[in-house]
Image 1 (cartoon, rainbow, N blue to C red):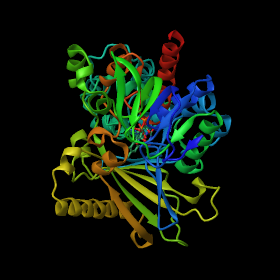
Image 2 (cartoon, rainbow, N blue to C red):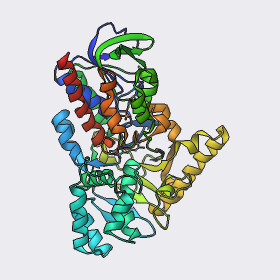
Image 3 (spheres, rainbow, N blue to C red):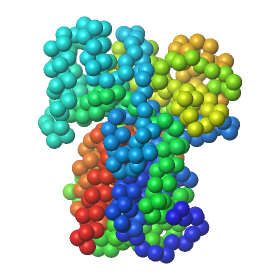
Image 4 (tube, protein in one colour):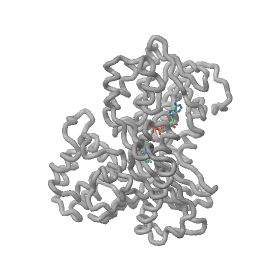
Amino acid sequence: MLLNKNYKITQNYDVIIIGGGLGGMTAANKLAKNGRKVLLLEAHDKLGGFATWFYRKGRHIFDVSLHGFPVGMIKTCRKYWSKAIADKIIQLKRVRFINPMYQLETDFTVDDFTSKLINNFKVSSEQVDNFFQLIMNMNYYDNKEMTNGELLESFFPGRKDVHRFLIEPIVYANGSTMEDPAITYGIVFSNFMSKGVYTFEGGTDLVIKMMQEELLNNNVDIRLRSKVEKIVMNNNVCQGVLVDEGFVGSKAVLSNGNLIGTIFNLVGTENFTPSFLEKVKKVRLNTSSCQVYMGIKEGEAIDDAGDLIFYSEAKEFRADELLSMNTTSRTFSLYYPRLRPQLKNAGYSIVSSTNARYEDWINLSKEEYKLKKEELIAATLTSLEKVIPGVGKKIDYIEAATPLTIKRYTHHEKGSSFGTKHEGLEISMKLHKEISGLFHTGSVGIIMSGWLGAANYGVIQSYEVESYLEKL
Ligand SMILES: Cc1cc2nc3c(=O)[nH]c(=O)nc-3n(C[C@H](O)[C@H](O)[C@H](O)COP(=O)(O)OP(=O)(O)OC[C@H]3O[C@@H](n4cnc5c(N)ncnc54)[C@H](O)[C@@H]3O)c2cc1C
């Protein structure tokens, strides 16, 4: 049931899920399908977490994180959601790269990447095959010593253009750097590369609506605008949560909030062993993002310029250039009316995304913050004009979001776009060993984030919750 914000919850649940991101929702659906009594509490006024959208001027719809996900999302949706949801997943046909080193277009499949490496970059087919063979077989439990930089240099020595081509999309996709373990790059890259990049026909609003309906059909109780303040424990056994100053009891709690926020704010350090906390303190957060949302005037159209464009004016690729406030590197996601065939008057919109550091934005005065946002918008428009000449005159709505916006809406520490770095995974998975009945799901590490990673991790953690409940 969709519970009203003022509804006083008096019953106890098998599981309370804190947060309705893709991880929390998928876990909720799986547990409810198993017959568990599930309450899903979401702080925001809609489900989805980062998988979100918003309207402006009544007609512009902006998707925040629907830029592309791997083909595996089809299987995950079919298995853990519904065939109807899975059937709406479609391939992005035109992925473009525009930078001073190369300009090319790909469908982002392993075959096309192989052909581009051989024909455009003149790399030998043997080198390419060996590279793909290694990364396609990478496994999370393999050796983590080798870094991304070392991996690329060992296969393509001195080929900065090839390194850029291979790593730049992944840096956008999950904030990884040349210093991160190659294993995390390999797994994500091979996931993305198997059969291209996909999106959801109908937009984020439709997929989340369908997921919410599915949750309600499976008897999940959902309450929006309900920020959990504390997880309640007795002798290190989870008892439920405090929400709106009221207690709601449950046998287990699964937090889909940021891992660090869950440990430090919702539970409190006094409840963990010192050795566990030592490990937690070493967990690094991923970086954040800025976005610029641009809506095209009613009646205006733009020609098909591609679906996803990796644009940069930087002569060479450097991960720190991508993160800098003055970066010239950004992705443009173009949304044509065909994305939302269910709407009669769907328009065109463009979303530009850049990687960003929370620290660069939090320390600005109010005036500086406003100015930096204006500069971000101006720089974005200048770049976009080079890709789609004349587009500026067709835009009638423009707005920017920063790491502070992300923090405000999702409560992620430092507005982290992809949760924590890979060391967060072990902490997330071992939370229940510190506090019985407390579990975590959501963006940790590079593998368990993004639309597919978050949904799959929700399933993995639902099995953990299920096995705990069975033992009770
Ligand atoms: C700008 C941007 C672009 C992206 N683009 C892509 C992309 O193209 N492809 C892709 O695959 N991935 C993309 N991602 C990443 C992807 O969207 C996320 O990894 C994924 O959606 C995260 O899901 P999650 O389960 O971790 O939950 P989150 O999305 O983090 O949601 C957590 C939810 O918990 C709620 N919550 C937190 N604390 C509380 C509390 N105390 N009480 C109640 N509720 C609480 C929050 O409000 C939120 O709704 C992008 C992310 C960003 C920021």
